[in-house]
Image (cartoon, rainbow, N blue to C red; front, side, top):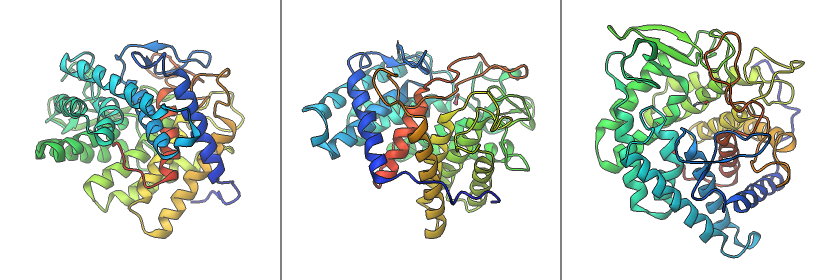
Amino acid sequence: MSRDFSGYPVLSGSDLAAGMDFAVEQILHVLPEFTEKFEKAYSEDGFYQPTDNEDWTTGFWTGEIWLAYEYVLENPGRFEKGAAARLKAAGLTQVDSFYDRIVNKRLVDHHDMGFLYSPSCVAAYKLTGNDKARKAALLAADQLLTRYQPKGEFLQAWGPMGAKENYRLIIDCLNNLPLLYWASSEAGDQKYRDIAEKHIHTAVKSVIREDYSTWHTFFFDPETGEPDHGATCQGYRDTSVWARGQAWGVAGLATAYRYTGRAEYIPLFEKVTEYFLEHLPEDLVPYWDFTFTDGSDEPRDSSAASIAACGMLEMSRYLPEEKAAYYTDLAKKLMKALYEKYTVKSFEESNGLVLHSTYSKKSPYNTCHPAGVDECNIWGDYYYMEALTRLSKDWKQYW
Ligand code: GLY
């Protein structure tokens, strides 16, 4: 690594406590509005509107509730009486909604079953033993298997199965796979794990470029399954580096190593992470695409910093002491940067947690629909809390 991060401050214990205290207070404050409903994928002028359980993102809101629940159980004196019970009841109300969604197959024909069901239902099952949550998550794992394309050996991200214009995987999907590993051990059935491993193998071979930057999406030939070409949807252009895509790669490789134990994923994780870190601007919070850096007036994607921090903290669990300390230190520096300059400080400012995230910004070259530019994004809030939680204890992952 050529860049020197030694002068950056780390998140302190008191920052961490203050960050989690405010996050939990914010969640308790908005809970009445967001128990039957969910926070939308992105805020508008800093405020999330309520939405039904329809998008790929609703699991992150329920995940925030579960992280808050854990924190309140551990720090009961810091919050209103009955806070843990309120959070648990809200989380379980949302589990009912996720159960209903998967049983009725409402807007589930895509690959985002892990993002939806791990932080909501797997979390609920692990924390409360709720059986409906377990059933819902197992059904979601079955649904994810239906996205598998044997020709090419990958899980197709979006769109009608087999259509040439949709015959692709996306880097984000590595983070949907823990649901399959969980289902394999929970159901005692190898089939989920087998598909997950095939997808990981294909994804790792295709989305990582020679310089360890990443493609957002990668197409395959539907006739032969042969790798075809990389392309972007949400990055600036096909050949640029979408900051959140690179962060999904950092987190996804940590997860891939965790579940497969394949030694060759360690140097890949290190190189993809190095690319991410080397391309951060001075304040450590990336612009939405690495085409842009200091001096640009393009928006940031603060969520990419939290996702990468979670990936580094996950990988630290499996690395020798010195390397683990190195990545933990970097994660604490990214979180300090977010905490100091990017987080919401009052209920009046926003009903979210982390400002300056970018969901999808239209460029002259990409194919996305613009949404949530320079706003709070629900996964940005979730991963911020997850990173703080990881830093506060030996966290039992939802993923
Ligand atoms: N996984 C979709 C996104 O990051 O926008």
